[in-house]
Amino acid sequence: MRRIALFLGATTIALAAVACNEPADTHDANVKAIKNIETQWNQDYVQKDADKLAAHFAEDAVLMAPGMAAITGKDAIRTSLTQMTSDPAMALSFQASKVEVAKSGDLAYTEGSYSLTVTDPATKKVIHVHGGYVTVYRKQAGGTWRAVSDIATPDAPPATVPSAKAKKHAAAKKRHGR
Image (cartoon, rainbow, N blue to C red):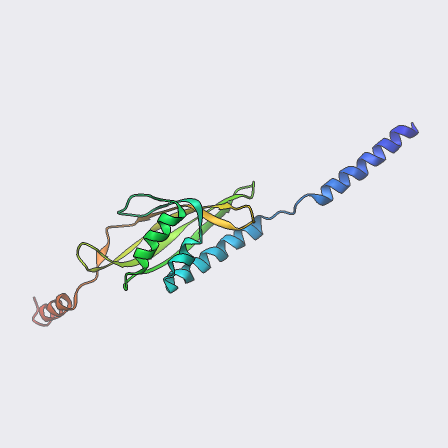
C-alpha cells in the first residue's frame, strides 16, 4: 500500500511540474505582434523603402495584387516593390479589421481594407484604388512573423484623378450652367 501511495505522490508531483513548464498562452501576444507588424509596414510604405517593405515577407512568399501576375519569392517581391515605390504619386495604407492566430501559434492572418494611389502606367494619370486584403503570416524559426501570402482585391475599378485642364473645364461648365 505504501508503494502505491509513493507512486501516486511521485506521479502527482511529476504531473504538476510538467504542467508548470507548459508554455503560457501566447495568443494575445501573437495578435499584438501582428498588429505591430502592420503598423510598422504602413510606416515603411510612407518611407517608400523597398528593402524594409520586402523584409516583411518570408523567402517563399507570394504577393497577389490587382492587374498583375502573382509574384513569388522575396527577391521578386522586392523588385516589384522597388518599381512601385519609385512612383512619386504612390501612397499605400491599410488597416486590419480582423486578426486571427491559429491555435498552433505558428500561423495567423489579417483581413482589412487598403487605399492605394499610383500612376497608371498606360495613361500616366494618377489613380486611386480602395479594396480589401488578406495577409497570411507564418512564425519563423527565430519567433518573428513574416507574410507568406499577401492578396489584395479592389472594391471597384480605379478612379482617375482629373487633370488640371479637366477640372478647369468642369468649373467653366458649372459657371455657365451647362
